[in-house]
View 1 (cartoon, rainbow, N blue to C red):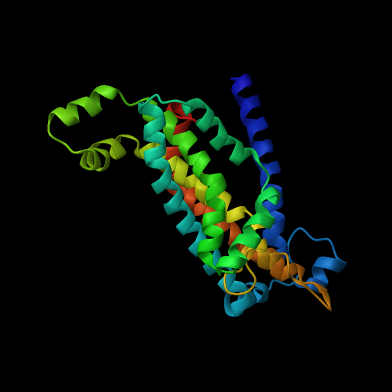
View 2: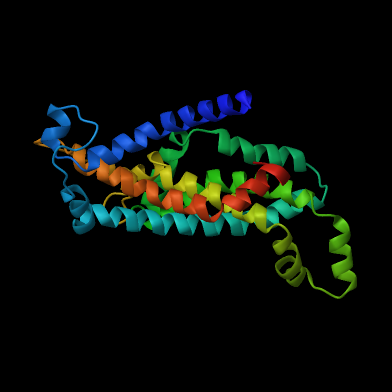
Length: 268
């Protein structure tokens, strides 16, 4: 009993410690810049929602969220669509150089985005894709496709090959078998891979800032450009940070069961 109580207290303290930055961000978002820079207070002395009003009414702010959501969804769809057949091939077939190719895919995920920022910038500028949503979505595929392949391959290896053979004997074509039978069996893996693709693309800054200027500028890039002649607008920046957390929290809520299965069954 004492051991369980000690574990509970330790976990509670740890969770409270983790929540301190989020609480302080919310606290700052409800203050004026004057109060943020001049006083230290655990709660706002003068509660204000002006910072949130600025975010939701200023196109330069709320369009950052719209742009980010567009290219994040595009990237997630493209990454999963490409990774599914690739992961199936790695899990079901042996071919020359398969392990080397698999390792090469993972090395792309290990490389820092700064290595690819200049090549992507020059390429997209020359073909007219600079400052477009598809440009950022395709750039993020360089990192998300290997991650999705790695996750899905682990799930697919857990599906017996006899299921494939039985489906072929029953007259299923490969596309029909893959969509109607195989994909539901690895639905947890698809959910986990989509979650990680979404989160990486949502929080990535360097490529999204390098490859956009105005029309497709992400919220992450917008938040780094809040310095004006009067200084940093801390309240608006904090409000933007709070609103940026919400999509990620919603995604985590909806795929929480898939993530739990991923820890038990796949490569997470």
